[in-house]
Image 1 (cartoon, each protein chain N blue to C red):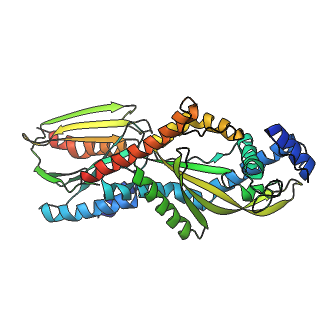
Image 2 (image 1 turned 90 degrees about the vertical axis):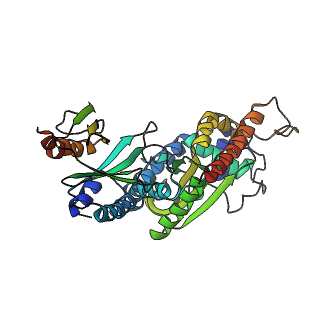
Image 3 (image 1 turned 45 degrees about the horizontal axis):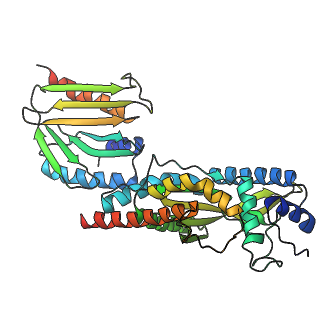
Length: 145
Length: 260
């Protein structure tokens, strides 16, 4: 896995076990995706009992989006081409100023990837800043008509 | 040796003073509390504790990959708790007197007194891991034993299954700590940290019944009627609730395993 991906996963407090699992999935997607994988995002949320749950891993290339659903417990992988322009984006946020995340920050993104497929990405705590960057640097430029 | 068996905490305090020269109880309490806080503080600063906290995330994710279910309740933060002096004193009363089958002679291993009780009582500082499922208890025991082994720390583990419906696993990790003596010079002592592992359901019932257990422990056993037959007594309901929950948790595991 790219060093920046490892650094990202470390910075959001994932375990070594999770990172090893992410590495396996990354290697799988490298075989599946015809392009270089340029971004990684680990979708997470805080469950009612306070547990932090990492639910899905998103890998992005220039023209494709890949999601590994419930990646810690399942081998369930999809891949979809990204429509241009990107058809839809919805952001919901809580205790987050889009500047610097706190432990209370939550960010929820719903986006249309093409006319058939959509995606739902969640972030809590420091991970909100990474989802914000993904919106700004990856998704918004692809919405230009 | 005065063979008159103390029947209450007050009598026990007098017995400690008159038979063992333990000094005024206020001083003993203050000494206990300062040493217990020192033990807690030293353990919290140790690499053992710091890395244990970090390892929880690993254990949780390893269990998740193995079973598709999360291991732990909550956000994985650990809290080290100090046994309150009254509970501690009550425990020494049970060991020295109430449950001492050698009375009026010392219990096996000798009297538990201020000069040795930090090494002899094994749950002065403790922490609790709450797991979601019954098999998580055994999983955690194995992880903690392996971790103690990695740290070259001696440990003992017990799977508690008491007649009174109490179910939990205890791992005792021995730590070397420098503690003040009652004369305020210092000594190096081996103390145990109790790592208690229980399930969410047992923890809920434990919290509800904690006060009841504390009171019951202080009372000497009396009466001929076994609690199993005394259905009007609170003990009957409380103890059987513990057993029923344990059974239910076993059934939950069976259902979970059938879904595989």
